Amino acid sequence: MDGSGLCTMNAELKTELSVPARDSSLATILEPGSATPLAPAAASYGDTASSAWWAHIQALDHYDPNYPYDPRHIYGPDWTDDDAYGKDGVTFMAAPYHRTSINGCFDEAQRLLGFNRVFSDRCLKLPDLGVPRTNRYARSGQVMPDVFIQKQPRPDDNRHEVAYDPDNPILFVLEVLSESTFHHDLGPKVEIYRAMGVREYFLYDPEHLHRREGKPRLWGLRLSTDGEYKDIELFRMADGLPVYRSEVLGTFRMLDEGGDIHTFQTWDATRGVWLDPTRARDLDADEAKQEAVQEAVQDTTLTTSQTNFLSQLKLRATQGELASHVPDTLASAWQRAQWVPDAADVLNVLVGSSDWSTLMPPEDT
Image (cartoon, rainbow, N blue to C red; front, side, top):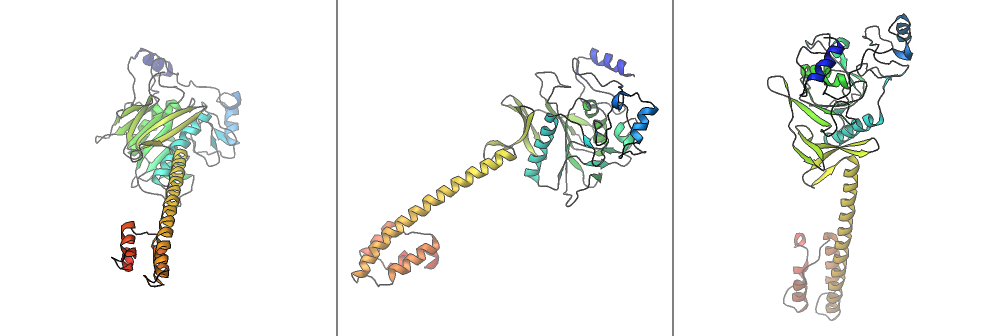
């Protein structure tokens, strides 16, 4: 089916298709009224896909004769809007909202899981997964998830290109939809991630390129036991935002803070708050400050009580009712143990009904 036929078909459909059929590889899954798929467009710098365009491509320092360049995308000296390209040093062109959404998920996932399981801007080199080569990622032999989480750490692996390892499965992927590539996220990537065995695939549509206004911009798919993706049920709504429960990250949401700032947050059930790296640092700092204040108050209370008790014991020592070394012995022991006896025990010693040794810290008795 050509692109115009697909658009016509989508316009007639009344229900959303969230998962493509196995053989629909390059089909763009759209809702009625959503953005239209990218039509074959002029190549870089306004040229057509001609010998002039190919001359531009072949003159690039990062030109790869084995890569299936697509004239619908831009390939500059060090940038591209082709999300399958994945060359080291070539930046993917994206709007600010796209980058903040990715960074938010990446940073929060690293806060929870550490640095060696969470990755972004890595080009995964793919083996033959049995996906038809009409799929752009199968054809190029690589894919670049916006964020992905693996089951086992990859310590000291700082390479841009990494081999997909089926023995270290990818448990979680987040793709943030952008204008030039959202149709790939909804079609070919679903197929390639399914073949890779990616357990959870979440999509975030901050600009409503695919999802209508009023519909949740965050949704997800989970691989079932029969190897098919099923919609992940909405866990709940919080502050008007959809909340999902991931097997990897727990309960989470994406917070739109305005001004192209999108913050990925996870729920801390122990504290009863939504956290992201900034809020977690602020909360940790506040708790540390409160603990320091409490310790200072406690130290002041101990010091005051020790001083009062020792002054009374020194008076008894000067009167000959206690050995002269007793106040200093007790002061040293109390300071070392950061401890003070009960007032009733001190009174018993002062009136002579108990021996002074009963005022020693428990570990010293």
